[in-house]
Length: 128
Length: 113
Image (cartoon, rainbow over all chains, first blue to last red):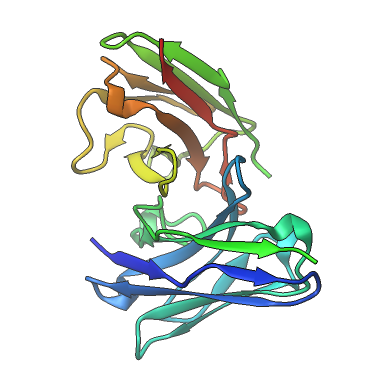
């Protein structure tokens, strides 16, 4: 299975941007999709979007469109998630996770299947 | 968006007893082309990242104890812990990967009675 190691905690002011990293190891970078999921403290899980590391193609949650960008560096097997125009309600733990690529017959939507490996999470605090 | 609704929000079960969590989707997540339900279950223990338990609604992830089982089809799904152990105290989430955005249930907290 893939191991994912995320960058450390960040403290940002409202209106700023944050860039988180998710470094993968243990399997080919092109064998899976990477998703980002966030969790406000004490709350549930919110899907943010996905990137296909081999193609670089992305799909984002509509609620975050225009504020989120996911990129990858294939030379270091690292995926990045940048969230801009931060608000206090963006305070959360941000997780990256892998999803297996599904065969053509099973691929309904982009992003592969279930989330089978998760990073340790990165806490982002947005406060003035 | 597909809304995933779990019930109950929390439950307390005695050690060794059965725990049952329900998940209902606002539209079917059964894909007719391959007859698979695009539904997964995750376990999140306090202070930890979520962990995959079940995918395709009933396929157990490697290494997951067989006391965990998933069932259901279409819009109604169930996660069953056949004999609750102390280490099963956690919040459990269902998630659909049938449509974008991928959505999660609100979570069900399982505690020891």
